[in-house]
Image 1 (cartoon, rainbow, N blue to C red):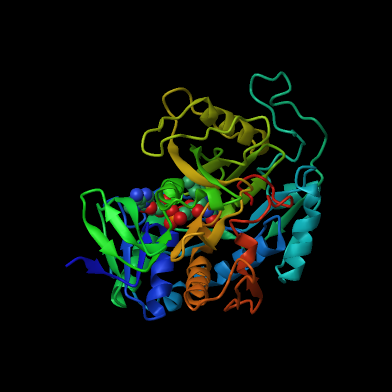
Image 2 (cartoon, protein in one colour):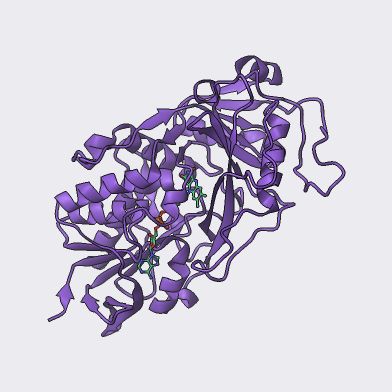
Length: 437
Ligand SMILES: Cc1cc2nc3c(=O)[nH]c(=O)nc-3n(C[C@H](O)[C@H](O)[C@H](O)COP(=O)(O)OP(=O)(O)OC[C@H]3O[C@@H](n4cnc5c(N)ncnc54)[C@H](O)[C@@H]3O)c2cc1C
């Protein structure tokens, strides 16, 4: 006799694990299945794990604000102590540069105000006082190193910045998934690794389970696609792509780790910097290093990959470009020579408007939490609650496409309209169309 579950969650990354945990809390028999050998071994392991509150839309800020409290209250949220060690939230603060690209943060400040998030507006002089290692000259809009303008200031000063003190990072993203796995197993969730889903089973016009690459079939009336950069493959198996207005694609990213400027204790004095003037974000990294990621400026060619299992995992010229861009902002940042590149290469599951899809599909019983676009690690615990609410409502007969499901978020007491994340939405024009979301 084949196995039977109430819900199968495809993927055991941070979002898949949180979705499994919340569905089990509703009393469902849950299987989290992953083709890799452990939880969080997919794109979550490459995450920069930045917990920040600035997003381009009020819904984006609201979700991040809610998620922030889950990380602060991590052990109580999980209700279980992982014997292999619990991760920690490390507060660093976040400096966000005002640029034309982000409309000098007008909408962001309005959204932060609405959510009662504290911030300070800093002039260039105040930025220099607070962060002496920061060069406040304007360099943007970002260009490529081949452009003669590269590395030369385009103005005396940036327009200023916001400093948001409640921002930071999680000490170890992969271990954070292990924490969720341990809590989920404690209440009965089954995790199965080294098991690749090769097909979605269907019966009587609805989803009926999954078939594995080795031929095993597992039955469940509800299947949730949380496959990260592989999400489009699972949606293809389910045959639901035609019923989606917003699509997802794997996008290659390079993250650089370089030593901090000499004499600067960056783990103590550094902060997260979100900087569309130079097209980079950065944060302190262990070992007195600076971690640098891209904010995907318009001059860069985005590298979408056809095969998330077979792409070039080596650093390219993009690595040096990002470090040189950051060296415009951080005085005396060392630029390691050829062969000394450190960091990582991984994939985003990017959606057309860089806002995720948390939704049902046209196949009854088949759901998705996909298109997380490099910016949803911080929201994973909230997404768990959201997907559990969505499944509960839809499986009770609610027509979510016509009348979107809403729920009250636990900490902020704000209403979350799940319709914001619909697969049927038009492209959201308020998005930054970058990792900022
Ligand atoms: C370089 C980088 C930096 C980032 N930085 C940040 C940040 O600072 N802050 C932030 O909030 N977010 C950040 N993100 C985004 C965040 O990490 C992701 O949104 C989040 O980790 C996605 O989690 P997930 O569970 O959806 O996907 P994943 O962790 O990718 O998990 C999906 C799982 O599905 C499994 N799978 C796929 N196909 C199959 C199949 N056919 N059968 C079985 N299993 C399958 C995979 O093996 C994988 O383990 C970053 C992402 C990257 C790549």
